[in-house]
Length: 267
Image 1 (cartoon, one colour):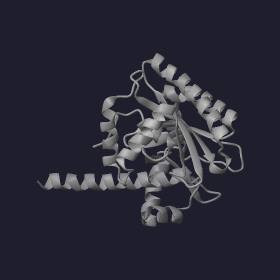
Image 2 (cartoon, helix red, strand yellow):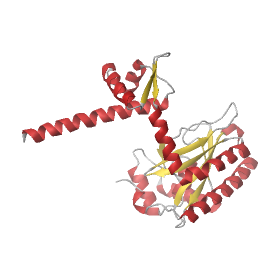
Image 3 (cartoon, one colour):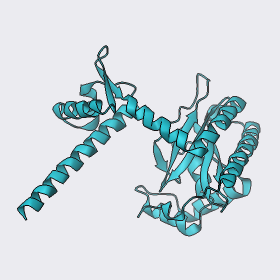
Image 4 (cartoon, one colour):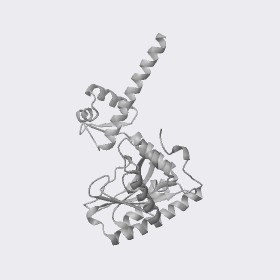
């Protein structure tokens, strides 16, 4: 019994250290460079603990220290993992030239968005060259029912699955009948739009990419400062994005990829 108790304590300590290290990596991912004191404040951890974890992360090349600025940043191993992940994902590889083309055609920021359980996550973004532009946070989760990219995905889910997404949300979601009406409109017009739902003053437009079974695989999205949106531009953008989504959809169907039904909602 004593040995089992010691193992449990050891496992708890290891899990706690891992959680703390992950929180450090999250902060490093959000900042280009950051000092030790700022890292400690951002993670609410003691400086000696942060320093010890950073030494471990640095040895694994998951973090690196810049002597000239005395700041930390993500290490080269993270970049290598990210590159391998993108290279192994057929959809991302196929999407990149299409996103580049959409950015040129619209002069605005564009992104590829996938569903991860009850959230939408931008996997890849190409940003506008305008001085006033939307910079998309790649990898940041957002509730599926907030913003055009997520709603474009929700519109092609069965109603019982939409209910489960709302029930599992950590924050209060929209009234179900109102949301279902919005989703029916999205399906009818073939694209979703939103203004100020996630960030005030930001407009987004998204078109779903469906697999052979008609389930949403991903969406391609446009992000624009609200001040540049007009009805004429919106019609033009919707046409461009529908065409691009059709191209990617055909590629997915040819590759035989589909969305597994058991990855829809976390319990």
